[in-house]
Image (tube, rainbow, N blue to C red; front, top):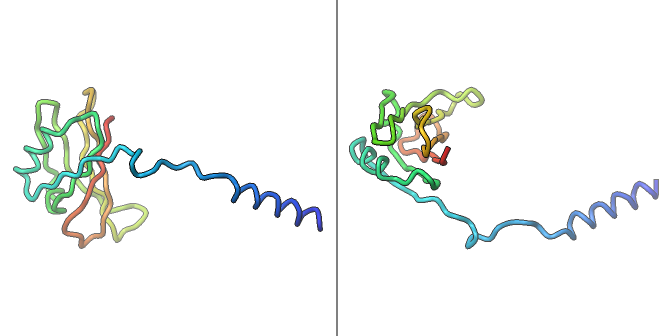
Length: 125
């Protein structure tokens, strides 16, 4: 029994003595936060957004209701939402990129059913 206690003690000492490897806030490449209040504003800002960096788009949830499309020179992106499989009290929000295109963004987010404004995380794909 004393060997088990000694082993657990040594393990805990090593775990807490090992410095955490985390980037500081200054070392992180922070994504752009882009807001749009309606579809026309989103269309302009979406098409102008660089495709090689991360973005967070803050948008009215209503833009995702009727499965709309953003048409840009880089391709057509689809906006839609689905009820979350894991949590039926939430919607999952998507902006899907065009297939076969290089330099595209793919976005997703999750929010409650009654949420009016959502944020979707967009990453280069």
